[in-house]
Amino acid sequence: MAVTESLPVVDAVRRELEIDEQFHEGRTQVRAVLTLTTNITRSPAQLWPLLTRPAQLAGWFGPVSGDLREGGLFEAPQGASGRVLQVEAPHKIALTWDRHGRADPLLIRLDPEDDGTTELRLRHTTLIEREEFDRAGPGLGAIDWEIALLALAAATDGWRASCLRDVPVPTSGWLATQEGAQHVRAWSVRWAAQAVAAGVDEATARQGEKATTSILGG
Image (cartoon, rainbow, N blue to C red; front, side, top):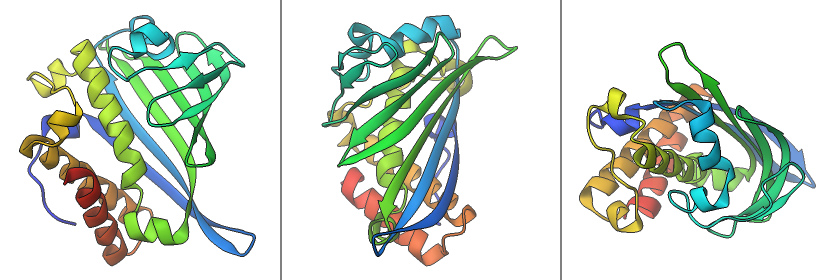
């Protein structure tokens, strides 16, 4: 993988990738489980409204409409929609994340830590066509969540203890800057490294890294 300098807001997230192949109607698909974990200096009770109330979601994630109670339907930015499957306030919300014709399971957990932070774990399971996975790897989907976690950290100032700096707000304008492109590249590199750790050969992972950086980082 390419080497990138250490960036505090990139290193504030821990990443895991699990993959396996599935065959459906003569097609080969990759089942990818993307897990992003970070610690935010807020309690679960303080973070919960930011994840479950449309008015507060709008302030950092974007406009979300619908019913975010258990069984409710919702619509989210970038053409996403879904259904809330399970709610255990203020610690767990499970839902479907429907986008690009796929209804993917999405789980968010909030667990208090002894140091006063909350461990936020986001787990997104998706099926990707083999050719698409080989072309772009897991990064195209994962970086959307990287950007969301950065936005949440900026809205809460929840990474100051770990990053020791102001966290940039990841607007489209910021993503188009040199700093934004540098972060996209760093995220791409790290997800390519996760792909190698999950069993993808390095040449294919590097191809995905370059594709994700080119598409998202300009």
